[in-house]
Image 1 (tube, helix red, strand yellow):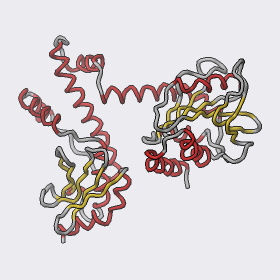
Image 2 (cartoon, helix red, strand yellow):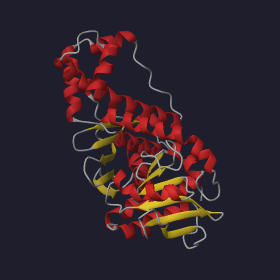
Image 3 (cartoon, one colour):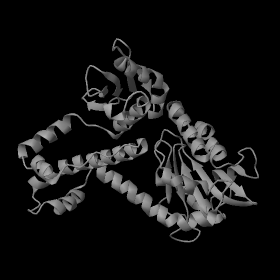
Image 4 (cartoon, one colour):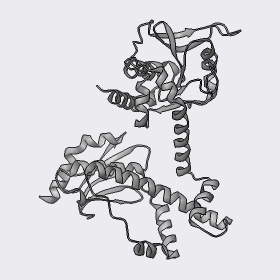
Length: 364
């Protein structure tokens, strides 16, 4: 099994078990030890590689323990401090890592709750752990661009010099990505004002700020949706949808009432990236039966419909994602819907036969 596949398998296990893991010890056994062994590749039962409850007296602090120390060639290379998975990670949790980092040879410190892994080094001052991580791995939403860097910490490909040299760029790129994500989800007044100044020449009054806050949020959602669609279309080998010409675009935005109506509709029904990704998975499955262009979607308040030929009488599936428990609705020959609970988008593939049969029923 390849590195990325092992990472995905552990992420799936965490999703399945996270609700029943409520203590720090359970977090270590269920999540952290498998991460050390299957992802980083170290033998958790070999004290020459992994030292649990590692102790190194620090000043007046005697007998304090760090959860795990990773050892290579007789030297401590990484320190790992664990917290229970049900809790959020805070910098206050890293106090022991700070102290141990200064008195060992370790250049990498990891703070984790089994689901999120924060990696630290000493970019700001030698032998002093930074206050901000250079790499954050979220097992619930794995950033594939981080996988090559994570591999450098594994036993098979350990390359400390390379990862430390890349740490500064990773640190700031990661922080910028998280900041941009936050601005897209909840645009700040400063962000709204900046973008407004690029497209609006009037004074930035309170009324303009209120108007453009909604427009910036809407444009952000549409931009992200477009990016997802373009990427998935490229994967399916489809041609991108042609952009409207300038005259059509101008006509679509000059009517103030039309813009307000569009905003009102957008507020009542919001299409999410997860729904669009689910749609593309369904379309990829059933395009073995019909041309992809015949598979379309319509969003509603209570569900996201996937149809054949844009026809309400030809439902293929419904995505019920606007609740804590997600459901995939599939249809039989009598158009009766059966809802199946799913925890991740990957589980849609488990119903590939039913989805294809639904399409065949309409094209028979």
